[in-house]
Length: 129
Image 1: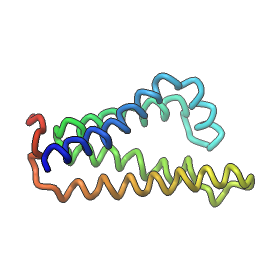
Image 2: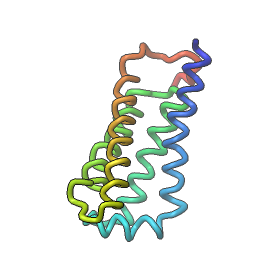
Image 3: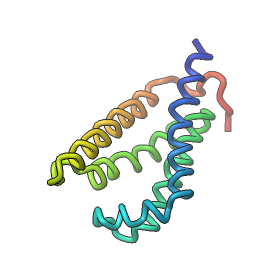
Image 4: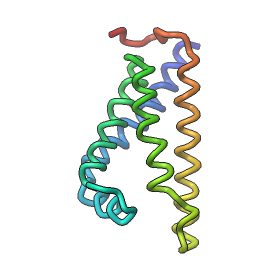
């Protein structure tokens, strides 16, 4: 079972790690989107949120300070869900549907992150730091 848990950590943490890297790789494309959503200092917000999910994802993936990793992921997922994917404010049906899907995905990811807090630490096959 410990290898299955490790595989889950790699998939879950890796998801955030790759998404965070994309924040940096595509900052020029993501900044106008954040600005259109009314986010102050949109470029800084994109880079800052990318940093949160890179560090949070690495924490979960490696099992290093997972409580801190979950806090970082929470700091990303909660505001992002309500500020960037506020489907209730969208007037275009396709935008509304896309935002609703992303909102629900983020809330589910948040729930999964919070469940990680119930797993005794140190996690099996984790780096102890």
